[in-house]
Picture 1: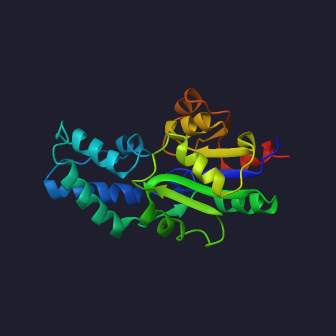
Picture 2 (picture 1 turned 180 degrees about the vertical axis):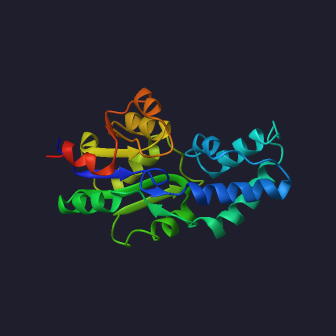
Picture 3 (picture 1 turned 135 degrees about the vertical axis):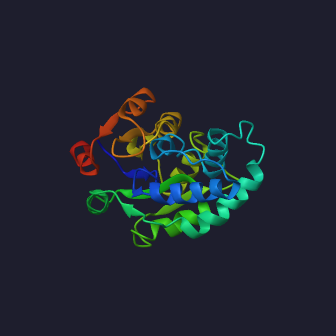
Length: 219
């Protein structure tokens, strides 16, 4: 397989960020006196952006219409500014994979539904500034995954000429759908937040049990 670029999701793919998201979400819910979800429940709410996470947290905690969404979102973002790097670390094998891809001169990028203003701070906990050629988090001016528009935007920034030479690596249905919608190669990270079944059902072409397994598919 000839690959020239690789676009990574962040949460659940490059970095273990669950603790930072739970600490932020639970702190927000406790502000309102709402019950907090289990860790397993969080796994299936992460990946669609901060505001959608807040909405789902409110619904799960009893605010069925998410009537306090705007207030809760503002509180969440203030808390997340403080906790976004809390206990964040790369998954085992990710630093080694990044090094191997760089040796092969594969251009690397990040596309995440995490708020853009926190994305670079989170990446800075584990990677040098020159690791990724381009980084794009969620901004109001750009659609969220799985809309392919932002994937195309990132692709343009990193010099993509053939979408089938681009790996789109992620751990959720949104990531696989983005890759399919954009005509890129959907690569599922089975070490992340979601199940193998979900990745396969949403178009995963290459399913990785661990990061370095990807090297078996590269020429």
